[in-house]
Length: 329
Image (tube, rainbow, N blue to C red):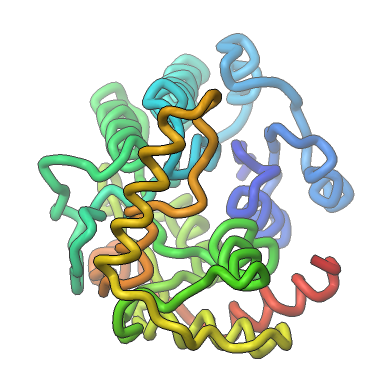
């Protein structure tokens, strides 16, 4: 099978492209940072540079491939709606159109469980528990991108979407790097009691889920799947495990949720009126993420994808910490 992986210069796209090559697939990659793709090229990947804004390029990217794994998109919690609309909805529309025109058989879309998040605690969220209102532009546009993908099945494209929660492992540039940076500056606090349990996903488990989505049978088509390790852990236990592995002091100071939320709201308000709208150092959403229970029901993926997560969070965190140390970060 020959596949295209978009967003392959990023953490998830890059790790999956490498995994797909190891499984014997022919892999074409596209990504914004050509230097980050060099290890994939050395393993035999085909690189086609260019911007997914260019419809002619996207059609060439999809030419001759059987399936597309679409990992590219806009991420974050700060920025104008137009940025997220373009990066998540607009580019997905480009990819879907190219898949249809080039007769690609299957499209696997990387989505996000941020769709569900409303600042409250949730245990065992199922795929149909979509809120009436989204907490931010990221969640709203990721959901709209899903709808674009799922709508393409009416035109003969086989489609699936995955919502993986808190993906980590070697190469993670989002979750733990931000926490480490904040802790080094003495600004990281346990929000609330620090007992909240959350789901994580080893990037190795996600690789298996994406690979399974490429080969899943007819019953799985047209569905969205929650993905996680399936074993919720206390969020702050995971954070302090990483701090110990990196020989940093534990995070042991607490901040009441109401105080943290108020400070974040003030920080966001100031940044909105400053020239250039700089990104705040505190977010209201971040306060909720660090203090609320949030777990996913993955029974749908187990049943229809045969998903059976084998790599524990602690193994994924060891992998991350070893990579972090090697990188000298």
